[in-house]
Amino acid sequence: MAVRPDGGLTTATDRAAKRQRLLGVLDGADADELVLTSHGAIAWYLGGTRTHTSLAGDPLLAVVVGRDGDTVVLYSNERARLEAEELPDDVTVVEVPWYEPLALPAGPRVVRESEVAHRLRTARAALLPVELDAYRELGRECAEVTTVVLGAARSDDSEREIAAALGAGLIARGIDPLVLLVAGRDRLGHRHPLPTAAPLGDRAMAVVCGRRDGLVANLTRWVRFGPARADESDAEARIREVEAAFFAATVPGATLGEVLAAGTAAYGSNGFDPEEWRRHHQGGAAGYNGRDPRATPGAADPIHLGQAFAWNPTAPGAKIEDTVLLAADGIEVLTVDPAWPTVTVGGIRRPIELERP
Image 1 (cartoon, rainbow, N blue to C red):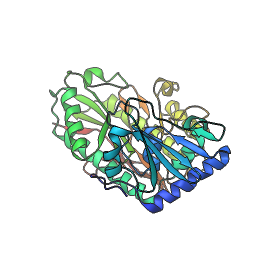
Image 2: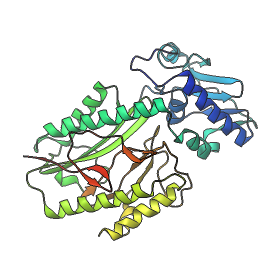
Image 3: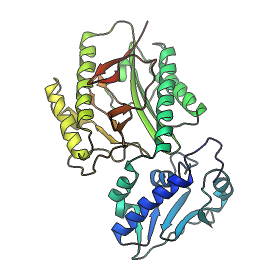
């Protein structure tokens, strides 16, 4: 196996288990080869392989999963590093000049990701033990970084200063900062607040999306400077009840669409506009993509034991989000730092606002 400087999830046992899952995808599609071209699918199959140089760019490689073995097609200028640090030893490597497109097979017995997207999501839904260990560590570290940064924040800090500190903390731990959102008091009305030079003011929200070993962890935290406002504390308590409805519906055998329906029904019963869920996405399954997939009405993807989720109930001035695992005994929160203040809702410890002087 390749020696990855920051570790990795590649083991022979897990590779074999994932290969069997993809052979099942080939059987279901009556095909002989499957071409993987997305960051999420490649990182999952190759055990956390880093598929990028630019976070905004396409993958540097593709994987052709065949019945007789796996072939990695990559650019010639990337081969030495990928073979030394990223790729398992049991793949055939084919290089392409950097100035040409990746040469990928085609034909009636070849399927692409888009043709079997549902089957691929099902194949990677239930996480293997080594993935669960890595996910727990990633979630804990993302939460710890957020605690440290917001715990040291000042009301006159700018949103960009907070984002910079979050990014530095994540990168120092080998975590790619995929999304860093920060909103101070004057910008809390924006659902996806890209950070600006505006000061935090007396209340702020931070959203972190971090990736390591291909796995993606998401969380949202709030910080307040000075006394709480009764209306905002009330909205926070009610949004936690909406989230509890999502958690209660996240059970094996249900579909993403059914969980979405149960969770969104809780908006009206908890004093929000019943149509509030239409104004922002509500999250969905998690893992090797930020949402894998995002839950939409009628989504038929089944819920699996051992699968990760990141639900995202949101209303004006209220939002809650963590990455969780559906374990045998219920919901396990992965993005957790014991130093952050919490309350218990539905038997699960949930984050509340961090109050600063």
